[in-house]
Amino acid sequence: MKRRFLTGLIPAIAMAAAMALTGGPVQADAYPTKPIKLIVPSGAGGSTDTAARIMAINIQDHIGQPIIVVNKKGASGGVGINFALKAEPDGYMLMEGMIGGHVLYPAMNMSSGYTPADYTPIAMTQMNPNVLVVKADSPYKTLKDLLDALKANPGKLKFSHAGAGSIHFFGIHLLFKTAGLDKDAAIAIPYKGGKRSMAGLLRGEADFHQTNLVSAIDFIQSGKVRALAVTTKKRLKNFPDVPTYAELGYPDVDIFGWRGVIGPKGLPNEIVDAWAKAIQETMDRKGWKKMVKAVGDVPHYLGPVEFKKQIETDFARFREMATDLGILVK
Image 1 (cartoon, rainbow, N blue to C red):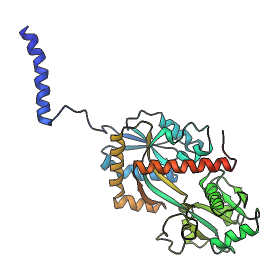
Image 2: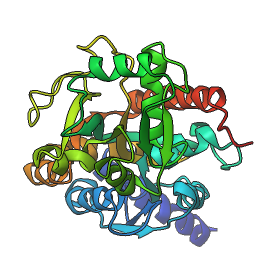
Image 3: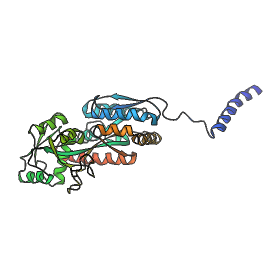
Image 4: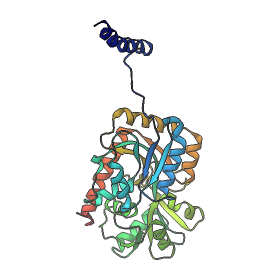
């Protein structure tokens, strides 16, 4: 009896000692305790992949573990996203978020396998404004010139885009809707990708084009295209002569690309908060800011609540537009 009593007493004494040293119950190791995978739902070398690797390099000191970038491309981001959504919500597999794969693709494709309700937004890290451009020798010097021409010649002018459902396509139709123009106000000329749609404009196959700023910067700076409007709230420091849609009277044309970090559904709040804090700290680093600006993005932080709201607003808007434009895939 005495031996059994001592056998049960020793573990209790050990636990009491541990509690005395720590000031409370013994805790499991704090997250994270091992490397974290960051799924990029696109191929290596693209802008989303670059954004993910910039974040991975810089955030390790703040999150406390190495970040392993894993590329899984296909289906406009759907392959990689569906893969990551099946992960355990333990914080060891997250995603590089992007408006194309996480919002635009499911908004126009009901068979995508997911909607924003199926994932956990953690934080937006950067944005890429959209800019409306024409060739340098175009007769349209201002947004008003272009809109006047569209109204005077319905269905005659052409715009290039990277496919129905792309940010280029939705951006132009958002302009049409906001300006009171019919959805067929101009002829849509599709190309395979943003680079080819810009090339189509430069060859004179289209009259205007709206794209991510990162895709247009070099052409604006070299004088090959003229920027008529940008979707930011304030004018860009690098292009102070380019007016915003808001100041021209069209504040609802506020579409922009974004990137951030997203987790699977059910990710615990403490993991979300740990990542949101680490992302904020990373975004204060000069090295991170320099690399992000070098690829044409604008640093832009939104925390979990604000990021979730932005995603839900984007999704609702583009699902409605996809339905109205007749491009919703069921």
